[in-house]
Length: 114
Image 1 (tube, helix red, strand yellow):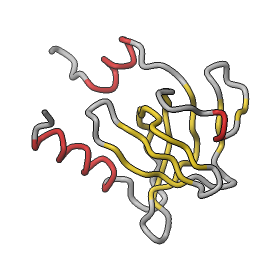
Image 2 (cartoon, helix red, strand yellow):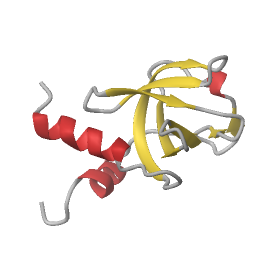
Image 3 (cartoon, rainbow, N blue to C red):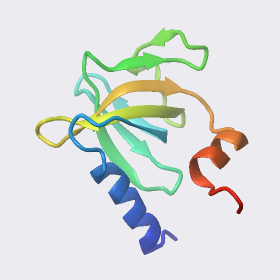
């Protein structure tokens, strides 16, 4: 069950991506449609969103080597830097395939001293 707090935090994160401001977030790939320039992504909290990709979006694998959007599969985990464009759409600038490690989880989501 997703609490109202979790949903509110998820919404604020995406809304907080002001035009031109880039944030880096962790997602699980649900689907990729390169022809339409979209990805459906899921947060670990099960909240989903559709994100646009463009010819400017840079993709890299876990090894750091370039890859294409079509190389991603459902269930892959990615770190995405994104911002909003002039129309307010969420657009990926970089997509890096990778796993969420325990140290990364602690750094991103847990407050020091907890």
